[in-house]
Length: 95
Image (cartoon, rainbow, N blue to C red; front, side):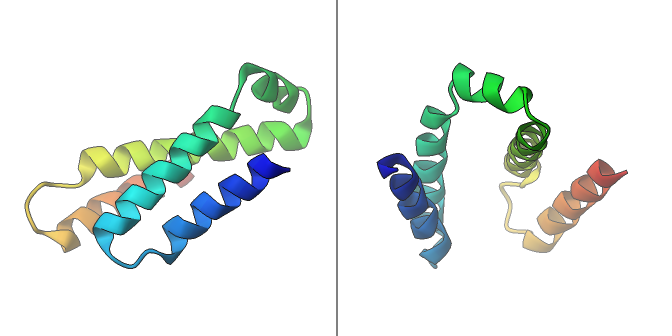
């Protein structure tokens, strides 16, 4: 259970951060901790269970959304345009 507590702590830090730079650091820390736990054994076990397969789909979707957000977010300061791109991507994934 210490792993779960550690992950909860990392995720909680990411959720609690209010400064965007602090949020980025907390999210990176949380993702690194989660990545360490997603071992081949965990993936294989999840693939052998209906609920586990659903969880893997959720993980894949979240990672895809994160990747697209990183790619689509422009380096200029046009937050509204960036949000429009991200919303359009998310909508396209639902169909």
